[in-house]
Length: 432
Image 1: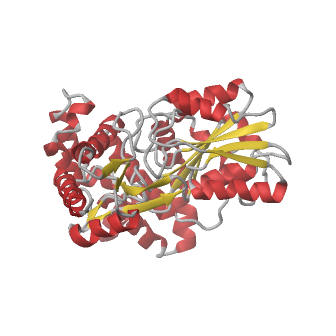
Image 2: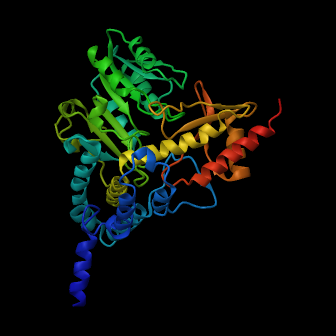
Image 3: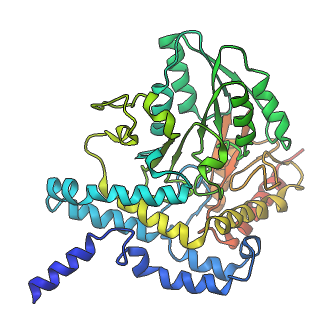
């Protein structure tokens, strides 16, 4: 009986994130389901302000109470169930790595691909699971068939790793990488679309779009840019590192050809997890970043030839999807936007304070940029942490100079009040 009990426990143990025995079902499903029923009659915007509801969500995280973490734009903490899934399956792997990894856990990727396809609103056969947005987008950037003289348009406000990847192709192969520049915030879609369109020449092959500008949180009108690009016969690459798991959208809604994200940001998946999407009819022409026995094949899995990889992390992604779905994408987006606007609205009229992010919902969500006259971003960042234990990040990049502040679903409204108090006091101390 003891042997049989142990066997049955192990079967349940291996069932994975999308079984009845998932950690989410064991620890959170009933409680969050009950909380959802209580707010079922409310709109997502109304739920955003319901502190009782969000207190249930906050309890799922293990964040350090001695600091207020407002740099979720860099990497977000995972709920406890995600951490425990990674730990559980890592321990299992080490009981017999080649057996449990290759013969058991490796089979968990296909159910995960299906669930991610449902979340992303696309064919699972268009999704490759990898480590981060840099890997996903570098796969596209280096995999595209381009020749000397072909032009690529990006912006100076794109993420540095993407900029450097395009610059390396320009250095090695003679493609032309052109960067336009914007002064954010911008609250007119047509100005942004026109900025890209005016840079197009007969040699332009690719437009690279950052969905949510990581420095200040500006949301670009990706669909409008993509539609314009396609009218000119140009393909579109989309960096949605800060969009997926935050904005409630489906990948096909964007109208792009290639897309990548990091899952360890707003989806709160394990650190070092990402996702690549390539439109199905374009998979064949993209070379994989790492070797594959059929590099010109049509199977999206050719982009997952990474050698030994972390199967425990993949199980953790599954639990993060469970947690996200239980809240609901619309509620999550509205809550995080509410938190961002909560603090921004309360400091925007303070003397010497400048916001670098729109308060309009179509142009920003989680990320807010702020500066105080007479202080460098580093000085403001240090003052927030040293005097108030509020963790942010200073940004100095091209024409952007500010401190980036990014709450998440676990952030408490009391934390936002402490941030407002800190900014008010710091700004009040500045002379002149």
